[in-house]
Amino acid sequence: MEKRIQKRWDRFFILSTAAVICFLFWVILCRSQTRAVETMQQEIAKEIIRFHVLANSDSEEDQALKMKVKEEVLKLLKEELDGISDLDGTRKAIQNHLEDIKNTAENVIRTEGYDYPVTVKLEPHEFPVKTYGDCTFPAGTYEALRVCIGKAEGQNWWCVVFPNLCFADTIHAVVPEKEKQELKNILTEDEYDCLFEGEKKIKIKWKFWN
Image (cartoon, rainbow, N blue to C red; front, side, top):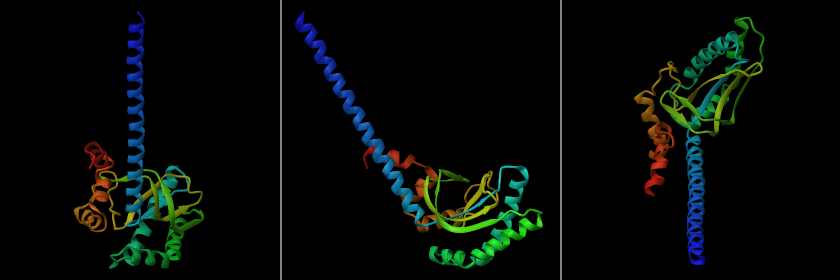
């Protein structure tokens, strides 16, 4: 009887120990994967500049105003960034035209009959996971040109201004092949795949321990 009880306790101890080991392995694996994604995001962020226009609120009128501001600012950016093909050049051009961007946004707002203030900054900002067309950017800090209208409490419109992914159809959009090639030119293969496959590639790497 005692031997039978001892065997049960031994079996319980072995199974419990195995369960604890598996759990600890899973925790370590998850943390390592999280660090890998964070590292990937940081490397991607070094190579791009995002563009965001934040509406005063989510009212239909404020959202419509946001889109009009976006259109006019994009026209200005297209002119001022024409011929610039590198990150530093894009950054300098944006910095040199922050006041012009603000004036452009204010003119649209006044023309539409509003008196919202406008803030324009090129700065690091924390963003959640964002999908643009078939391209998904992991959560993290990115350099961004931010045009904030009024209280800036409404949903924002966004794109990537370097390299230029600011295409028109944001509902059924797929990043054009030309822009995909520009991304390939500035990102590593793993960073590029991370944008278009999310965490899939990283998970596969962990599975096969590459």
